[in-house]
Image 1 (spheres, rainbow, N blue to C red):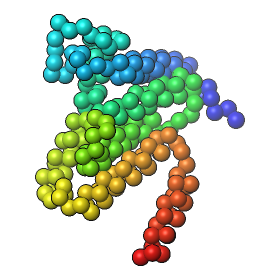
Image 2: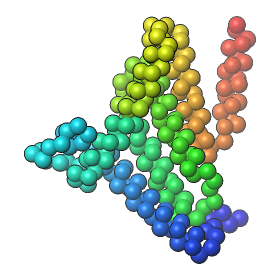
Image 3: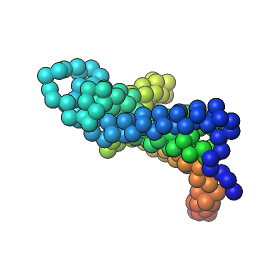
Image 4: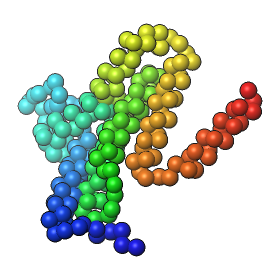
Length: 193
């Protein structure tokens, strides 16, 4: 039953502890700088020393939060929470596999969520440059996608479902219950068709 405090050798113990503490401190920095981001602070494309910086970590925090918000949008908080999760897992010594692959999947799910929101032109949250760039490429190769009502909704729903599956995998939530719900919905739809 010992799933915690599994470090291996003493070198691995030190490596995991120091890497975990570094990840926890970086994620705390990132979460606080994203939470205290102000649009008037200096950032990407707007360097000015005349304004008062309202970010908790000052100039470095405003640059970091501006970079993450420009690249991934408001959903970049999910990345910072994953880094916090990975740091805690490494520090405690819990056996977790594929942390790097899960990190890549978190980035992919954020991009897909932003693509789904961009496809529908939903501006509830700010989306990032990566999803805007990929949407422009997608619209270039499928030119009528913005005018085709059914395809636009189908593609955005497809992006959102894949992103939810990836986030469920990241949080290590069993997809069995989710699969049963999806299967029942499709079964009801097939009955009516």
